[in-house]
Every structure is written in structure tokens, then in C-alpha cells.
Length: 217
Image 1 (cartoon, helix red, strand yellow):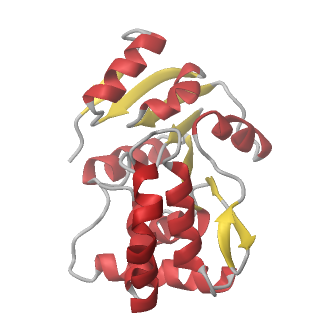
Image 2: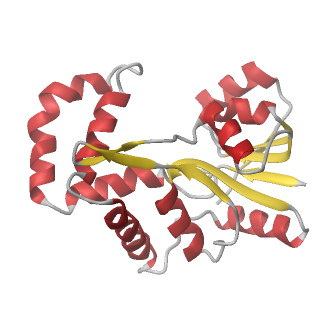
């Protein structure tokens, strides 16, 4: 059977892409200076959900300006290495245990995430899970930086998983967020990992109470 795992805040303790792009911005003073200078113009757009994507896209473009796809791949690997240097893990230990239990049972485990593919693959490799199929977001060159290409997010996960040979329905799905309601609807068994109150209510409104809440540490 196919078992589908979300990545950020399901397997990991935080939004890994957000932290990665912030790390890229902070590596060079001129990038942070550009952020500060642009705040009066892009900052107000963060207030409204419908316009929030534009400053976020600008931040990603600025973080990747002058960097090639191979640079991003190398930097993603470097970033992940720094997170493990102090012996701490960005993964929930309960999540890794559950994922490995599914593998040991002979289940086909797939990770589907909006995270950048090079970043998510670096995390999985560090955890010894590089053999697990990964369906993730990609980027493309854009005016000297990088922009989103295929975004493996919400309803987009379904065609991207299908393209890779993992079409719905899935036997089991694990996620933390209501953005995965389309994925949850296509699963036979559903597990919510440390959901926020907002996500819990949104998911209940869409699928009722046909799920199990997991509190992972």
C-alpha cells in the first residue's frame, strides 16, 4: 500500500524552506540591505493573505539572485549540514519512527512536499532516507535569480504524484495542515500531526472527524 507523508512540520519541526531562504539572505549583507530598503513597499503586502505571495516570491528571488541551480543545490546541502552540527535533529523522532515502521512493513512510502526538491532531498539523505521517493517543488531561472516552477502544494500534489506513478487513492496520509485537504480526501486513512486549531477546524469542516490526531515529539 502507498503511504504518503507531508514534509514540513510533519516530518520536520519547522518550515524548512522558509528557514533556508532566510539563511541565504543573511549570508551576505547586501541582500539583507535590499530587504530593509524594500520593506516599506513589500511589507504591507504581508498583511493580507491574497497579496502575501508577492513579498515571499520577492524574498526568494533576492535570496537566489546571482546563484545558479547548482549553487542552490550545494547551498541546500551545506545548510542541512549546519543544522545537524550540534547533534540536534530537525526531524520529529516520532515521525521518523513511524515512517521507518511503514518501510519495515513493506509499505511504499512517498514524501510529497511544497519544499524545494534539493532542500528536502538533502534532509532525507541526512536522515538515511534518500531511497524514499520524493515529490517536491522545483525552481527555474528568473531575471538573474530563481522563481517557483512546479509547486507541490495543496491540490497540485495530486497531479505531480500521479505523474511520478503514485496516483490516488492512497492508503494512508500524514500531514499537519489544512492545505492538504485535497490529499486527505483522496486517502483511506488520515493522520494529522500536531495541527493548529485553525487547521483542525478547516479539516473538520471538509472531511468531518474521519481522522486521527497525532502529537509527535
